[in-house]
Length: 350
Image 1 (cartoon, helix red, strand yellow):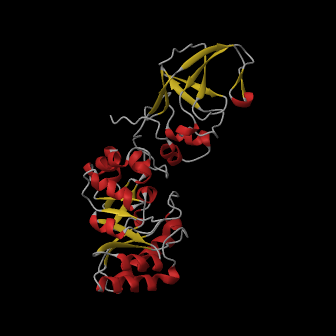
Image 2 (cartoon, rainbow, N blue to C red; image 1 turned 120 degrees about the horizontal axis):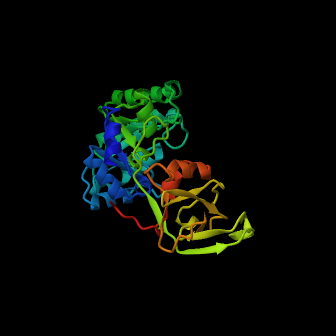
Image 3 (cartoon, rainbow, N blue to C red; image 1 turned 135 degrees about the horizontal axis):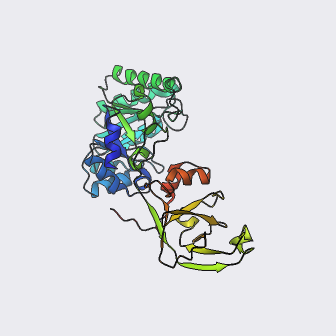
């Protein structure tokens, strides 16, 4: 993870916010946050005040921003833990300022074309005016303005241009209202790597921390390896049905090995027949449907004994499947794979 932050820093002079939502993209929020800060990230970001407070409890002192508050913003906890909060509507800001026990650090979240949260352009003036009055009353202080790129994965500056223009417009409006020069941030990992016009004062790096570049521009270092021990091996004849509904039928006499991982642990049930794991330097195909707690591997002539380690995915290359392979086999994106690994899977920090 530190290497990934270092690589991203070669692409931007903006401050890096390490986004550790979804438990650090499945890798442990505090673990990822500490590695990112050690590598030079100046801010942290996550979705909830509770998650941010846990980072404070883990000893992280850098500024932390939260931006998704389904039960309303806990103003007292945010103030006590020195947590910045993003607000994306006039109503949300009004409620926050009414409850603020002291001067809260606020980022105005504006819609820059994604239509998924953020204040709509038609109400920017109301939001900014309310923020100005709240600042005058010493209930809040605007320290940031943020938006999201709707087409960030495309290495096409023209696709990002409307969002960049809106972000600049929002920044001008905030400054014109006398709210100073708050941090402006728009880009996540893809925008940071493929379009410098999106960088502004700060960039938000999440997937890139754990080795995922959705834009495909930069080779990142995979941050995790998922392994499991074989718990059972059996020899079966040709024509043996495997798993629920016998969806897989052996074409020859073979060996089947069971791994104690299933869809409850984040192994996608939608996997294509091409899905494989690595054992002793070779790939072996999954056989049958993914169960809640188990998958079956067709190991051919190899009767691997119980306890033999299989690698589901990892950063090693060669025969070892990568996270991108599993995403392709499941018809999804790598983010889904890493964030889906369940709590029963033991995490070991190496």
